[in-house]
Image 1 (cartoon, rainbow, N blue to C red):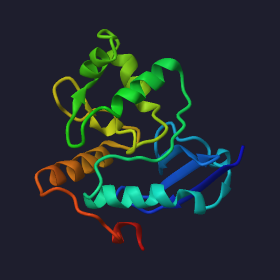
Image 2: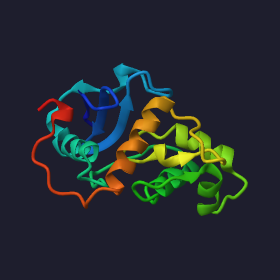
Image 3: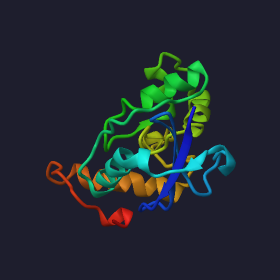
Length: 175
């Protein structure tokens, strides 16, 4: 098992990407709640993360709405069910914790859904930022509510624009 990591700049601040044997296992923001200790990220090596970095750059510029990178999410069966349901929330849309609980067949588990959402190890790509409070207001986000709003704004802005076009370069990542 070869654990590697790299850090890239983004509009929401530095993102640490962690991978094991070619699969993304973590995408962590700085000062993120539930961020694992740095020493668990493995050796620094940006090489395996080219496709992830490219897709994140496309996401932030509005030319990518879905990610297709190999991932490996480690968690309880309930957490993995919630994380899978997060990936089914369409780009630019939001649901409440209660709605997400209903979608997974656990209508009384809104709080447990919120806890699982908060432990999502691959933020942005597994879009936990698309989950809102019951009243439609921003609530809880491990990266902070300001970042959650920024991610929602990126998606809102790009759902009212024309369809995405291919991108070859992104200044958002400092290339």
